Image 1: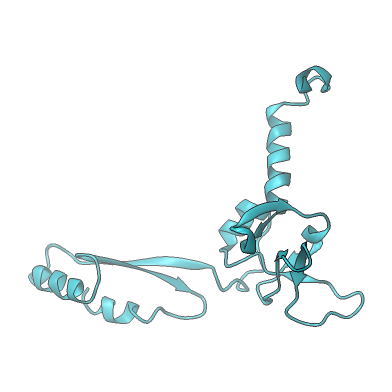
Image 2 (image 1 turned 60 degrees about the vertical axis):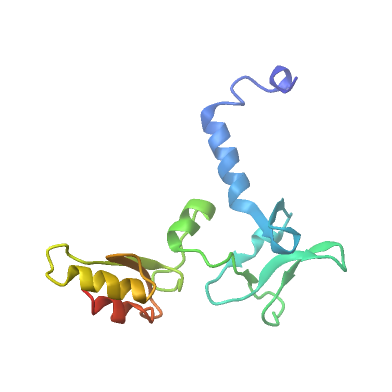
Length: 159
């Protein structure tokens, strides 16, 4: 029925891609409702900030979706919400923007430490790594701008 009343070309691949990107860039995840996805009018006007802890969720006592602000806002202040602990790559793919360079504490690069099988102490090092809860011969760490993970330097000593 929809195809009969829709204008010709309304369901083109380009239009469907546009609709998909608009929909997914404005969905809100309501954690108190088992991560239900919802479209909430006007709440997508709250821009993301890496420096805030405000969030959008369902308030059962009010039976409404609310923005739980982490600070008092004055009239005409821009209101921010955290879109969650996402890397800049996730922000770009999901919402179509990236935070300012260096401002996202969730940006990371994975550092993998692998033992060389040519190392004469390979077996002993694998056993020592396993005793410390690491996979045999390899361990990965997400290194973020805020610092080095606590286990990275001890693991690097094996390499």
